[in-house]
Image 1 (spheres, rainbow, N blue to C red):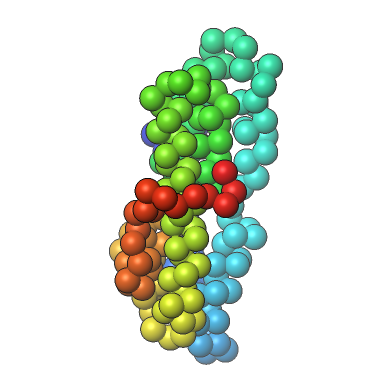
Image 2 (cartoon, rainbow, N blue to C red):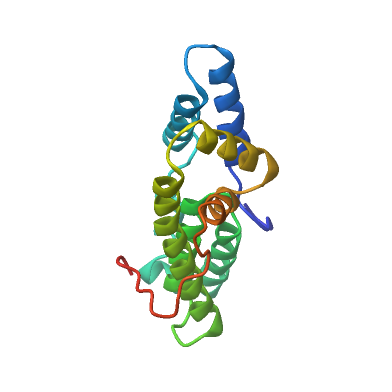
Amino acid sequence: MGSAQRFDIYWNPIVLRTSRALIKTGTMDSVHAVVLAYGLGAALAIPSYQTISQGCKGALLGPTEQLIACRHLSEMLRNGDTVLTEMIGTLIAKRSLPDTSPEFQDAVAARRLVRYRMDMGIKASDRLGINNKWAELNLRLLGETRTEQQVELGLIKAAGLSPVPPADWVDSKP
């Protein structure tokens, strides 16, 4: 991972190509193909972050080199192409930064925004309905954007929901 600026698993291309391949078989409609592709991507494409996350925890953060490496890892993951990758990056930031630092506060705010958008993403799917129009919108967004987060944002906007949490919004899982 060294000097990389972001950690991508190429989520959007994986889900898009899997969806298209499933549709091409003629055995299922686009709705089922997109839902199955998301499930397969989640089960097979997303790596386990346990090892790298555990390396940036507690007593292991003592040496300066380790702390610097963890902070870089945090930034790289926060720029990743999946919600989970971004969330792991914010977790590592919260573990490796002083809670009074602007970077720590930025990580807290980023986590709040991700959590809000996760909640709104569920509401967007409910509002839009899981139907052919929803599947086609997902396929278009997957093809036009780089990250899962951008697809989620597109769905939120398409549902007429605000992508920005109101000041009084409280994360149910801080």
